[in-house]
Length: 196
Image (cartoon, rainbow, N blue to C red; front, top):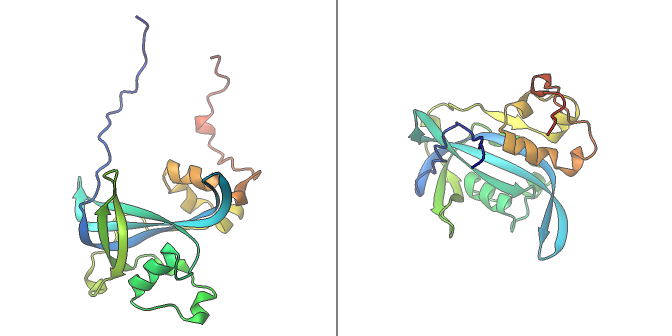
């Protein structure tokens, strides 16, 4: 038998929120850039964003759980983002608003989320509704972060560095960052030549 190296980190697993309608606060608006998608053999590129909400009444180790949803960056009435924002705001977008709505305005805004379980048993956001007592929602515990590709391209990377490694990797695969020097200057991780 060989000598097997293993990680000693314990895998506590990911705690999912409970299904149902819950108070929430948007704590992160993340520009994922233009992402490649392949469906039934056809490849397309679409600008995407990710919203992350904090659920103040659902805790793990004293911290509120979070839940996220990916969207194409579109306000078309048939788009998921357009439908969720219309429901969240409680009214349709005007033609003027459709010309350019800054989704950064969603940061730190309260809402109600209807969470359901999908076929694989994963809890996901089904719908977003207005919070009728938003001013009574507790302040955010998690960092409230707005990240844009434009900031990254201009070397404003503080918000990028605050995101999880998985989300950073998605952003780095965007069309906007192809070929760009995305070295984060982390010399501490440079272990030199590895002989195997």
